[in-house]
Every structure is written in structure tokens, then in C-alpha cells.
Image (cartoon, rainbow, N blue to C red; front, top):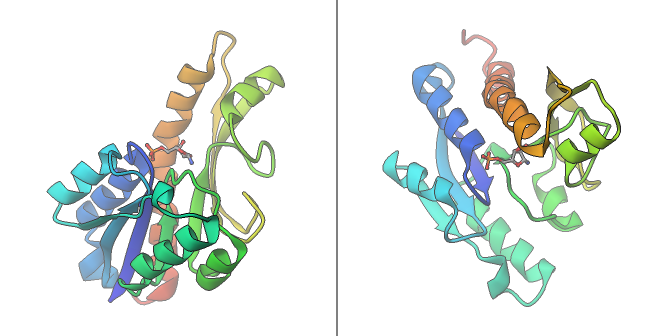
Length: 198
Ligand code: GRF
């Protein structure tokens, strides 16, 4: 079995898109792949409700309950390892993860970032793209390395920046594309993993 663990902090709309793609594209039958757990650092993350409704195991590892980043990372690592994942998917997970944690999951951890990397790493990507006068913005799925928002690019989507865009309108346009490229990028990884599948 190819176990996928998804980490969220909020609405989890990317996680939902991935779970729906797994269902509609029959990832279990085709690739032996299943979303085995959704883990959040926030107990009130809306995405947890959806995951529970889908019968997916959920867990909260609240960063505020740990005295240091290292202790939080260690607890999170234990929670993830319990599902022996082949793939760890960061989907709007809003904590910076330490070197040891990333090294532990390196080569099997991916993230989606709401910009056309390598432009606009970090936060407030949409406003910064508008302020810079960019004509295009987008999102990037990439492998996770210890350096923030760097790592092999697996997929990108481009959207236009319109004259009257604000952070809200641009982020909504980008998000609709995220929901397409994130499941597609994971499907491509699954196809590489089981090359005889269609
Ligand atoms: C997305 O824009 C993602 O690119 C960024 O955080 C947002 C998460 O949205 N990392 P959601 O929780 O998947 O709805």
C-alpha cells in the first residue's frame, strides 16, 4: 500500500481536492494508494471535518502545546510515522519545519506554494505579485528541502493578474488552479511509483 499523509492548518481545500481525485480516479485500485491520515496543527482547522466525514483518520498536533519547535517537530514526526507514509503532502500547512524533520521526510514530502517559484517565496505572495506589477501569477508544487520554498518543481499553473485585482481576487483565481495541479502532480508521482498502472 502507498500511504499518503496530508498536513493542513486551515480550510484544507487542496487536501479536499486531493481526496476527491483519489476517489474519482480510483487511486487505490490503480496505484494501491490511499490517503491514510490528515494531520493538523490547529484543532479548529475546517478541513478536519471533511476528512472525518470521508472516514479518514485525523489527528491534531497543536504546536502551542510544545515548548520548542524541536519538540513540536518530533511529536509531528511521530504522528506521521505511525502511518508509514510513502508521501507526506503539505497542503496549506502553516508552520516552518526544522532541518531534522525535513531531512527525515526528504524525497517523500511535497508542498504547494501560491507563487511561480522561484519568485515570491514566503508569505503574502499575491499582494507582492500585484505590488511588483506582475502580469502573471500562479502556484507551484515542489519537493520539500530544508530551505524554505526551494526544491524540485513538479508542477506549475499560471494565471493572469488583472488590472483591478486585489489579494482576494487573485488568490481565489490561483486557488482554483492549485486544486487541479496538486492532485495531478501526486498522480504523476504515483504513476512513476507503479509504472505499469494507467
Ligand atoms: C494555498 O493557497 C496554498 O498554496 C498555501 O496555503 C493555501 C492553503 O489553502 N500554501 P487550503 O488550506 O488548501 O484551502
